[in-house]
Image 1 (cartoon, helix red, strand yellow):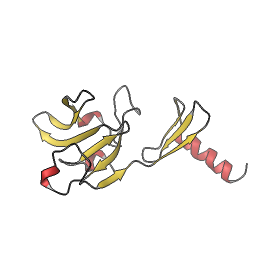
Image 2: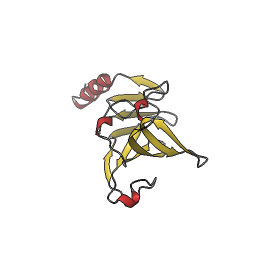
Image 3: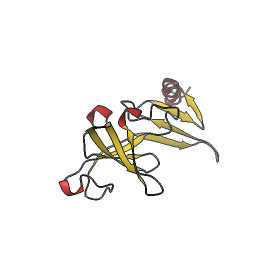
Image 4: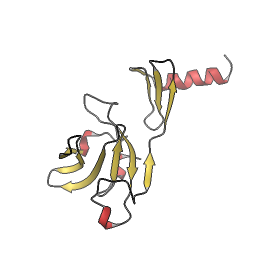
Length: 136
């Protein structure tokens, strides 16, 4: 799913499990309204995310939207709960535990590869996969 496909009332879930409500065309622009860990309601600009639903700021690739939920009824359109909502999209990712300390995470939607805390060019990961498949 792309940021441009989001609409008001859609619920998004980050990789850390935080929920936020998409609200378009507010006086503050397009926003995601949410509740922080202290149960304080807050909001952030939707513009902080790129088209692949990844935070575009300094913490790029560490904050991303991994799930998107639709709403079926107007009574739950403004709620921050997933019950009575259908899952529209979930980020396709592959995780592989390499050692006790390190794992590799491949984000198939944004073509991002993280091994431990290092970014690896996605095309190199695909090249390695082909070499393994070919028995080289």
